[in-house]
Image 1 (cartoon, rainbow, N blue to C red):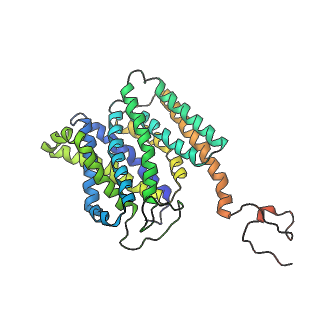
Image 2 (image 1 turned 180 degrees about the vertical axis):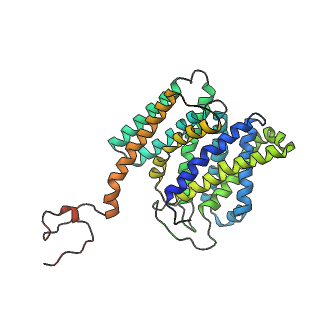
Image 3 (image 1 turned 135 degrees about the vertical axis):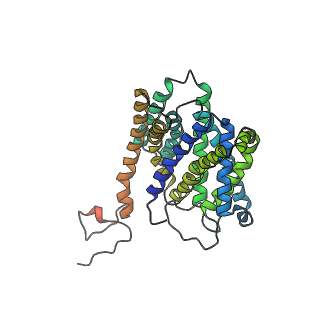
Length: 334
């Protein structure tokens, strides 16, 4: 699977990131919102447990990594719950645009330039455009959406830390993102850590979610649908995120999330018949345009970094060829 570019994993994640919740919205008529959220988390935890057996991981982690896993699990539980409470009150495209605002903040923090400041301003204007019309009617929905936005930022930070933990090192240890390293056999991977965190999330969400999910246990079809939501919402996209995060810097991954509002709008229109208004489209276009500016900044710099061109060394035998001067280049012999 490493032969695929990390962008391919992101596309898979983006599609299922909102396909699963759009299916969950259809369940809200039969199962309580908190119950659907718990079914999503618990069914994903069961799939991960059968696949990765995360209980074997505990003995190989230190106290710092166990704390990181616990924090990640709690974030997953509360984030998924807040997201469902938001989409129960707001269109999926609106929640997706608000959720994405936090990723631009992370991306802007990763590269401080005037272009990035402009990107953040455009994105903020886009979110304000989308929310200004309906905020008076659904204040609680927007509160949940912005709470989900903050938690999604933590998901990216903690998830990236787990994905880039070296074999045998705690998740709190950092290595350069995007660098591919081979893991010794039997060592925990980012997906193993994700499986353990999902089990913690299931336990954390049980107090507020299990009661609402009980009616589904009397109807096998509803239970199966809830399990399908868990696979589509938490297994496939989160695994794809881990595979992408392991090979992309955090700022780059955050920037690629610019596509999420567009995916949310398309899937919401197809599955839920939530046709976006002109104001929604304008706001989403501002969000995507802001990140497109930020991505262009990264593309302009990528060639120099790939060529390892830095400050020029003194090469008196190459006058007028500063673009060829870089540390480590062998001197030319006349």
